[in-house]
Image (cartoon, rainbow, N blue to C red; front, side, top):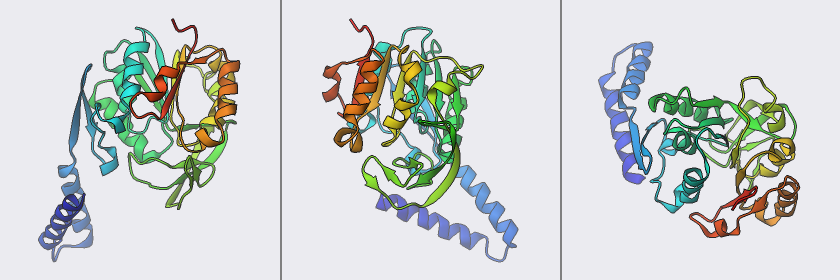
Length: 276
């Protein structure tokens, strides 16, 4: 990290030197062209093929799929659970790692929700880079208990950042310093499912940095129909919300596959309907 920052500062200094004496607008346009020329595409190798990612910030560079930090259990769930023709709802898609992986073979549809405008822009760029425009629908929405307009409290405003929060400055680990706000449409997943053109989910991935319970409370109808849901359970979800989360899940006819608790990152729990 320190080396990369040093190098970027050197390049910044050189660009300032080369634009000495230029008009302000000319300088800005030069910097913009320079930034565009340095924009990179990062590729990761998966068992389903290569996935390409536009690099808009350090946080938009995905982990190696085999790294524990990359949640290998989520890749495994997608690989082993989605049948041809199934639809995945990726709630909290970020820059789209799991959405792209689910759609790469072009036999599944994905609906991706990502409220951060910065991450959403990168998500759409990544969808186009991988030629998956027809297979992934990306919406700049947040899931919620009720459908309304809320603020996204941003701990980090850059693309690929995590631990932001809808409606408050509290994520799964507690209070955080807010560095920006963004108005966003927060929608009940049951309401989302009623919109014409939206494919109903067969599977749901839910990773929203502490707001999982609120989203589940607004998704009771679709939960009664999905085949499986993978939920990130850590922080407040583990210490305070777990009983209520499991009550909602159980009422929908889903049961936990406890073997999943110790897989990979250990952060996700998997719930199935009629899993044999």
